[in-house]
Length: 80
Image (cartoon, rainbow, N blue to C red; front, top):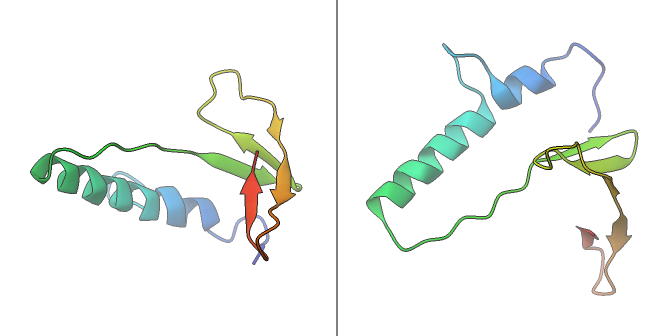
């Protein structure tokens, strides 16, 4: 669900140094697991969806907008 500006969405995801957010905690746990269980490979995407536009935030130049398409297999959607 979309929320208004200033409702804490970014803080929930990123947090602060004293109180890490969901993304930071998940990545910390993931890499701790990988440290103790070698042999895995990790691929990571960091996407922004804003005004119905999708961008890959890991592309140095900010990247071009990605196309959103519906797959033929039911209601699943994928980013191209």
